[in-house]
Image 1: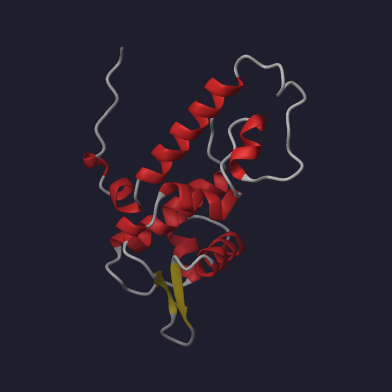
Image 2: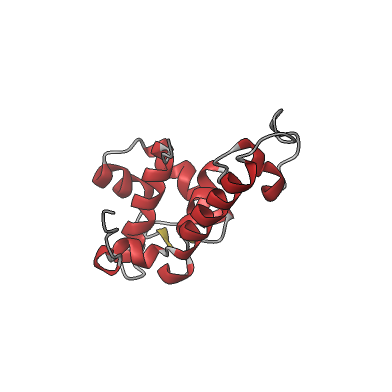
Amino acid sequence: MIRFSKMADYGVLLLGHFARSENSLTNTAALADTYHMPRSVVANLLKEFCKAGMVESRRGLHGGYRLAMEPEQISLLEILNVIDGPVQLIDCAADELGIVGASCEYEDVCPSRSPMVTVHKRIVAFLESLSLQELMNDSSLSPVSPS
């Protein structure tokens, strides 16, 4: 099953707040209170987003955080990578991601390796194609038609 972590949910929520805040500064305490999250979780996520260059901080009495990039420049894949590391759906995609030490014992004989690597690549490409702006404007995402 493909599932985003709770931290990834929180991260998208926080970045979405900044995307809708039109460049205004928001502090950690206000974010934690608004979204009912522990302050330590908010602080740690914002620290990671700052290191990745997605968010910038300003110290002081009127300080806080805001996006350092335009929302359309931040992909869902980048957000997930900052929070959870590289997206890896299957062990045999480790080579594709350059993950050292991860491998599958059936790699040489597996008939589904190639198709599963293709699935992995398509999902990663889809995550990369979704911007924070699109996520905040969900009407731009067309629903998947049932087959």
